[in-house]
Image (tube, rainbow, N blue to C red):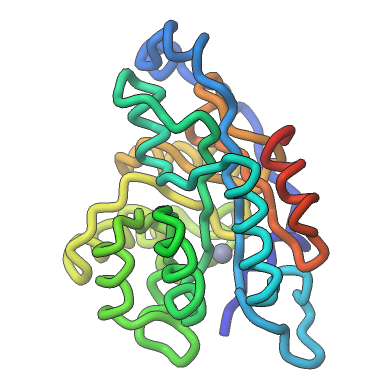
Length: 257
Ligand SMILES: [Zn+2]
């Protein structure tokens, strides 16, 4: 199974990514001044890594995951979707006093079996960044599982069709992985994803332009830090939760970026 080796492939190939004047004008100055930074957490597997797993740092045990959610809750955090943040940034309803976006990449079975119920018990909503080739495969997610996420109020975002390094593929392949995957989300899942998540966090000016042209409102990366309304919306940072991240450490990262 293809795994999101974000921790290893941190190198970001990017140039000329500044927001255009039009995009900046879309963001109300008032909201920009008032909105606090929002931590967007990034999880992969919620399980013990198998022996010899090369990307063991991207596996969080079930017990540690539960402890992290409890620590966030005790610190006053409340998990919301990225779309809720986006709407608050653009004149919509206010966010909770300490919002956090908890995102899960790729689409693994335990994200349905463990993460979804764990967030539901707290009255929280998460974000699933789904790569389409994880649908209906062993260890991936079934269409019924995707329905359970939607019913629980989760946001399901586009993490490409086959999870390639988008900076290294042809124009036709790029369209298939971005515009094509969005069309497949609509046709096969009845979901119209509004946000894109770059596989491996890999993005350059060409990839950014393709995601923007496909109609996505914003996109998430693996640049470190908390997201703000002043960020380039196609380059939102995220906080990678690693196997070594303690509950207290995660609260610190969510609080200070
Ligand atoms: Zn991924």
